Image (cartoon, rainbow, N blue to C red; front, top):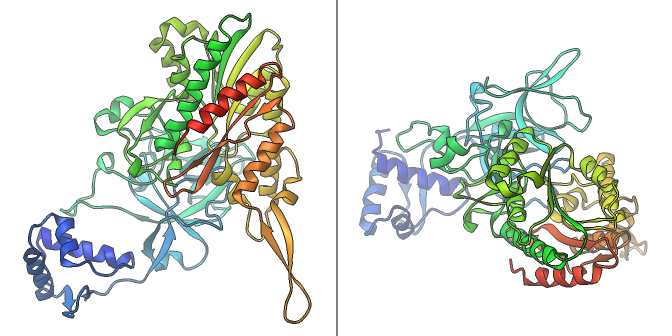
Length: 530
């Protein structure tokens, strides 16, 4: 075949893209719109050139163009927006985007794709913006490149196993390798293939300049805007779109009302932020967020290139007027703890009141709650990345009788993904739900058996899974068993496809202040429009 000009190659790629997505061939006007041409005659000329050079066949009928080249058979795998610890990567209800990959990569097993952010695997030829195709499995052998989850962190690394140690090894000397010691570490899958985007010229785009839609970050390397990439690398924490803004607005308004109400009381007022991140978040246009955004709420996952650094919950709390007497920020990542230290220089008048605790959120909160709270009051914000919060932590908060709690319950992003349609739930998932809900009774609440008459007289039994609303209502009832007051109408946070992700809940542990606290919280929750 004859060589193509740059514009002819672009037109051909547009036609290939439609074919790969299973769409009909674009019309002349659709191609005009895509390439910003004024005349359909321009399209006709380029298509004729592609026919003349042997790349296309035109049938003469509307919207019927046929690619003459032989193309390898393809399969379509889900492009997973994020991996949540303790949650199946692909749920029964997965309806997200699927991308074409060579069929030869997916002969046996279940597969998904992730987009890479960061360069900790660059020496293995895996760069930022690459899509890795992963076979979903829980075991791997020495030398495999794996997607691994260690408690609240998910990363891509090379697995190395010897007699005494198991290591997740970075393929970049600038990043440290991770020794696996915890039983909570799990393998999500093994990388079996890689796909890379190219510029028009055919040269590979430099990893630092490619925009991507969904990413998993090796070695915690988060992307920021082009201009600030090197200066602020890792400075901010990824969250999602207007839904994140809405929840932070609710909490920020409550903090201001809380400190105003307690201004002239003898209590020492505190703010506690578990999973504090870096204090900042990165903003994206709403059009670029979706279910995968919530890669958004997971620390090692990124989505489209952020535009600005916005205030996260920690910064908003520090700006609350009247101020709190103390601020406790809990974060298990040493790197993010170091970034949280910068808040002292940004708020010098509050520096002595800021405490930064590096550690696992459940243990740190339980330790705080075990202290004498008779002369203290606090607001605690629990915004986990997945299902990390345990019920015994929530129970410890309630027992202080001094803390008001705002908590994001992983309604759709966690719990609903563990609840299989058949009711056959693996024991490890059951244990995770037991820890989250503090009881084993949830199964009877979430599943029921229905009998349906048949033509042969013997009824047929079928397991029916509860609706997602039922799951949320159950969690509210659980909160009411330990807290003095709980908001009856929590706010469901949806993604751009209107699928439930989290449930923003409020609970007050002090019986004397519960009524006024609920009045304020209910008012703020009703104001939220998503």
